[in-house]
Amino acid sequence: MVQIRKRFLALAAVTGMLMASSLFAADSNLPNLGSTTGGYSAQNALKRDAVCTRCHDESETAPVLTIYQTKHGVRGDSRTPTCQSCHGESEAHLKGNTSGKGRPAPDHVFKKGVYAASDDKDRAGQCMNCHKGTARANWDGGAHQNNQVACNDCHKVHAPADNVLAKKTQTQVCFTCHKEQRADSRKVSTHPIDAGKVVCSDCHNPHGSVGPNLLKKNTINETCFTCHADKRGPFLWEHQPVVDSCVNCHVPHGSNIAPLMKTRTPFLCQSCHDGSHASGTAAGRSVGGNQAGLIALPSANVVGRGCNNCHSQIHGSNSPNGGYFQR
Ligand code: HEC
Ligand code: HEC
Ligand code: HEC
Ligand code: HEC
Ligand code: HEC
Ligand code: HEC
Ligand code: HEC
Ligand code: HEC
Ligand code: HEC
Ligand code: HEC
Image (cartoon, rainbow, N blue to C red; front, side):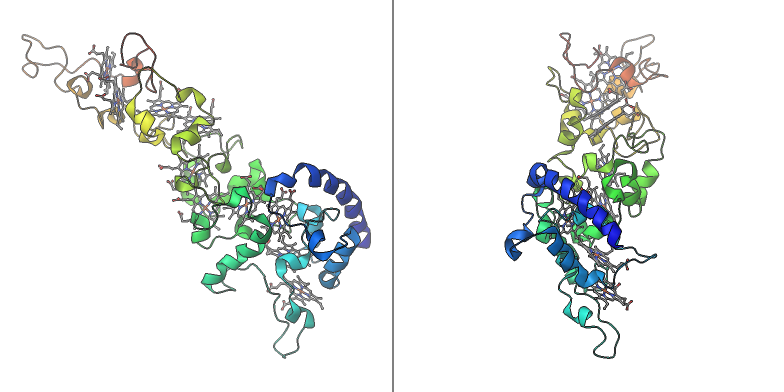
């Protein structure tokens, strides 16, 4: 064990120096433990961990020392937590079985239900002591915080690889709770989520946001425009529902109607356009008279054709010929 620790120490000193300079700005509120304890050194940090690691050496079922392989184990970095920055001083736990009731738990064990529901904040609170940076500015009141989902429901801090941080594995973590989105991701038309090219956190900030549905941007459209900039315009002829919200016609997570459509055309269009040309009921070529409805054939426009065969510039157009979204 000692050997392993030395190895991480050397590695850590190097990455630590790199991190301290380049990544410090990422979470500007990260406290510098060195400044509060005086005389920070990597050795001191490990010594402080030894309070715990003298017993928690290695366990096959729940290895804890793998934390030295993560950014929380970078001993050369004075912002790095010790065991006690997360688990608390835990005096009673350290004293051991003094009451005859077994060893009391440490101050913070991050288990749901161990604390009263109102204390679920506490599970995140330990982490927020260091991580209330910009990305988590809206944590309080967000859908996850509100529903007692805590940091470690997504993040595995002792594991060498935190699945939720890697694009390839992130969705697995989300899908453990969000079954509906998992089902959507297997439909005919989807964002390339399975391929790991688009992930949940491209559109959502799971830590909280000012936008609806934990979206990263303030509106749905702004979120879509981060990748589909061509749909932003400006267009000479705007289509009002597009300006209003992309989800008037699309669904984000998956649909059996390509491309990510809410409903099929012409029904989709007809849910808003019930004009004679669009409805196809009695507006076709009139035979034997020109009063609509007398003797009418179904409009050629709707028989076997999608509306967007002709109205192909459905997101908006710059055509000089008028606002019918054809060219
Ligand atoms: C004297 C040995 C000893 C020391 C020192 C010690 N622990 Fe423990 N710890 C144990 C034992 C034994 C258990 C298992 C208790 C049980 O299962 O009832 C345990 C359990 C735990 C658990 C799991 C609790 C749970 O409810 O699942 C955590 C977390 C923990 N210790 C953290 C720490 C931290 C942090 C420190 C340092 C502040 C520390 N321990 C110091 C012996 C120790
Ligand atoms: C960054 C915060 C953090 C630090 C630092 C940290 N832990 Fe933990 N620890 C946790 C969380 C969160 C859990 C709950 C398990 C989970 O969800 O990953 C946990 C779980 C544990 C457990 C219980 C394991 C189990 O699954 O039963 C033990 C024991 C433990 N930690 C000991 C330690 C020791 C010893 C250290 C110092 C080497 C330490 N922890 C450092 C956050 C931390
Ligand atoms: C004492 C301060 C401190 C505490 C407490 C703390 N962290 Fe950290 N955390 C850090 C530092 C320092 C980093 C490295 C930041 C960097 O690289 O800029 C970090 C990085 C992270 C990262 C990014 C890891 C990566 O690989 O990019 C995650 C995720 C994280 N912490 C989650 C947590 C969670 C969850 C908790 C509570 C269980 C917690 N932290 C508690 C200081 C802390
Ligand atoms: C619902 C799942 C989820 C919860 C809950 C969650 N996170 Fe995260 N976290 C993620 C995902 C996904 C990423 C990577 C995507 C990104 O960078 O936005 C991430 C990235 C991070 C990072 C590294 C990037 C950054 O923003 O600095 C830190 C640090 C972090 N989380 C800390 C926390 C803390 C602290 C909590 C609890 C207050 C928490 N997370 C709760 C999913 C979650
Ligand atoms: C392309 C952007 C995008 C991606 C990727 C994405 N979402 Fe969404 N998500 C949205 C939008 C937009 C809404 C709001 C939908 C609405 O208002 O109809 C939403 C809504 C939600 C909701 C609220 C319930 C609902 O369906 O309206 C949940 C939960 C959710 N997303 C989870 C996820 C998960 C989990 C993932 C990863 C598998 C994910 N999202 C990936 C854009 C996205
Ligand atoms: C431990 C379970 C759990 C995990 C893991 C989890 N969530 Fe959630 N999530 C919830 C709960 C509970 C809610 C609130 C109830 C709801 O809206 O479904 C929620 C709400 C949401 C919402 C907002 C829904 C709305 O209506 O506003 C989004 C978006 C979301 N989660 C995305 C994610 C993403 C992305 C991930 C993975 C990075 C993730 N969740 C991981 C449990 C979880
Ligand atoms: C992170 C980037 C990203 C964001 C944000 C994003 N998309 Fe996409 N979108 C993609 C990629 C990548 C594709 C696949 C393109 C391809 O296969 O050529 C795609 C494809 C699509 C398609 C066509 C699907 C198909 O079957 O051909 C639609 C429709 C779509 N996105 C709508 C949206 C909507 C609506 C939003 C906002 C809720 C959104 N996108 C947000 C990246 C993104
Ligand atoms: C009025 C309904 C409607 C609205 C609103 C709408 N779309 Fe579409 N979208 C369509 C239709 C219909 C198609 C299929 C076009 C085709 O197959 O020729 C489509 C296709 C797409 C495609 C794939 C083909 C392409 O043109 O790249 C993307 C990406 C897309 N839409 C993004 C968006 C975004 C982003 C928004 C919001 C700014 C949005 N859409 C709003 C109806 C709509
Ligand atoms: C959510 C409602 C909605 C949906 C769905 C919708 N539209 Fe529209 N559309 C509108 C509104 C509102 C206008 C603006 C009407 C106006 O200015 O009189 C408009 C305008 C138009 C115009 C220009 C009409 C004119 O007089 O300038 C055309 C063409 C059009 N839509 C075709 C379509 C097609 C094709 C579809 C299906 C792919 C569709 N729309 C889906 C609401 C919708
Ligand atoms: C064969 C090509 C074609 C098809 C298919 C077509 N349209 Fe049109 N549409 C046009 C043309 C051309 C115009 C321009 C006005 C005109 O000449 O009547 C137009 C005009 C419109 C207008 C504005 C004027 C009005 O009559 O309200 C709307 C709305 C519209 N179309 C909706 C639809 C919808 C919805 C569908 C599918 C049910 C559809 N169109 C199918 C060619 C087509």
